[in-house]
Length: 191
Image 1 (cartoon, rainbow, N blue to C red):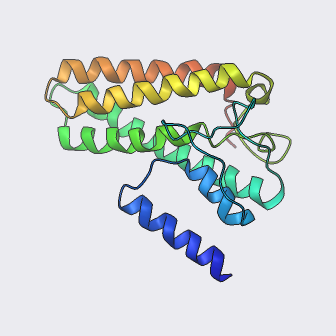
Image 2: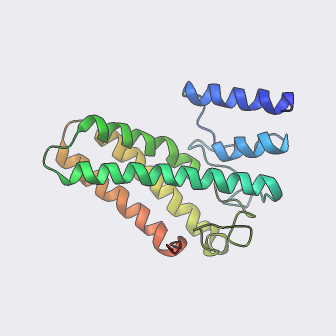
């Protein structure tokens, strides 16, 4: 492993473990792979690129690595949503499990907008992301921001003990997921 890559990876791991700056993990991964500096991040941790809501284009190994990171992150969000759904359907949810999974989603939500730069679509490899993401980048970016806001609001509600408020915030989070999944996610066929 190249020393610079190792150092950058180790620094990122340390920042992530310590709750360091909320920059897009995608941007950090892209920088680690290419050896270039990551694009600047906005206050919510999403990538900022002049005139490009989804960030600067990527290609080759960088695109494949980012697509893998996106897949793993979305799987983590999906797994957390399943636990939350199960817990919140009951009358006495395990609030520790709810809080833990709400925090997982809140931590991943700001990274979503950095996981979809041009060059990481279905024309590059296997993905559930529809090409419409890159055809309507402003709409997709707005939906990603809505998801981030809903994730933060749900996490805040989960920290309290008002189960009705937690369930209401979870419903809003689910709506933000659906608002993006319906137009921009293609279900993979199960064999």
